Image (cartoon, rainbow, N blue to C red; front, side):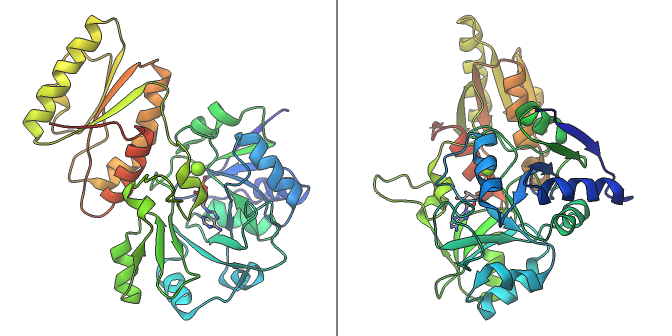
Length: 351
Ligand code: AMP
Ligand code: MG
């Protein structure tokens, strides 16, 4: 399939191009588009055939449901039943934005879109290209992240092209994602909102609005046998680079010293060694094949924004062994570490 790549400027939206993208969706095709979190792989959420195509293009297991993207509040009631006052409060506060809420689904949403579940995940993204595109597509765009299943989520059109060129109809290039991590997922079907996947919006921020919040154990990386994450996607290996990734935790000096020893040891064995560091420490490492900083330790937004691109760069440079510092920062740290720990397959060393 020939994939059309269209550049759109968020500050000067080309409405012809948006209309063409919307037409692709209306005809049952697939379009990757930018959002503030990561790039999404969109299809008509109300068309079971389009959802099946999304799973096929990503190589995604079909029990892993898609998020339905809307562009205006009233459309929530078309796809979601039993929308509580709490949900409306969260929508008022955080939509458009990086928050996905789970509701009981209405019959109009096909089981193909929800991975067979009776619930539906809904989000209103905060990116004007995304909103215009959803509007031009008929209002309901099912979209998981636009990566091949298992790879790090794409935060630029170049990443999408790497994974999806030839597999989908169109890619909208709208520049780099501002946030760089997938949305927070919160289940609104119970009395207490439950965080199923951490993200830019923390559990504390949800609690500030509703005075209550619970966490699915999977959020903390609990992989106890038989404990099934409520967000089906959380059970799959994810975000993973091709090389072996290890996270090193502890006192900064000890971490730097340990990683330096591992660089030397890896190189002696003929391995290509990559390091994921911060601005504060990057200058201390010697001889790594690839040395990347995700930004200043205090700037957690920078760490979130650069993490996936750095993991992909490790793949581009055929890195065999990757050593990463940990990034347990105050607010988004839980989300950053949730992704990094998954990418590392729980391979963590405490020094
Ligand atoms: P992605 O956009 O690629 O991060 O994938 C969507 C995520 O939303 C996956 O982790 C899904 O498991 C999760 N998700 C979507 N719908 C539901 C739902 N109805 N209940 C729980 N989790 C969901
Ligand atoms: Mg994904």
